[in-house]
Image 1 (cartoon, protein in one colour):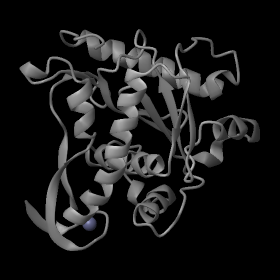
Image 2 (spheres, protein in one colour):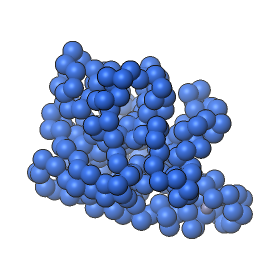
Image 3 (tube, protein in one colour):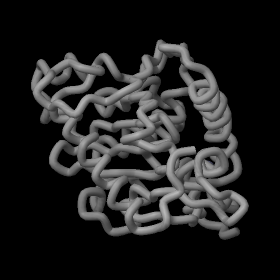
Image 4 (cartoon, rainbow, N blue to C red):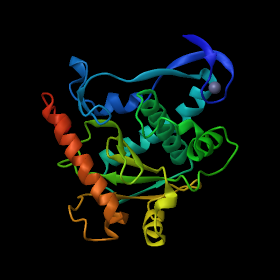
Length: 255
Ligand SMILES: [Zn+2]
């Protein structure tokens, strides 16, 4: 453990070793656990067994993260186990989504990814951080959107990590069947695009998640699955990344 400033609350405390992508996701979705686990790492674009950890947060901040993480782990297992078309969620889902996207963006920044190199100066960084510190009750306009995708042929649950769509300024993070998409530059969206995006927004008050069983390949059909044609294009690129990652190793397939 190191004693330096916690990246969230700023206190000088012992920092904990914590997972960038939650431990439960690795435990539940990485294949071949008895041989160390394997998953398609979306951030690296290859099959990996390395659980990414960083000493970023103090014990108190970790505790705050773990409450929403436990909630989402249970919700995620329920989605896998059951075949309902929709699932209710509460305010903890947005808390988890913001902590996940915030950690993913910090990870890419540390990797010197040019999309995130100046990110801690940006408005989204400040708004997400204020929200996590409970100094703000929502993250508008830097909203996070969730697509529950049970299409395991195109998007196996054994992929994990973050994916940047530069063209559309989106940050996507996959945890099993849950695909969290963050709007990093909401000001580039048209009025019509914003109307569609609002349908998938994770509300700070809670709401209902709809399950997508099969993702269409057509980018000519607006409004389908609450996705703009551009976002459908993002998922096509993600599918290609997963395929490329899979070809880098002995792909464990879907679980
Ligand atoms: Zn802290």
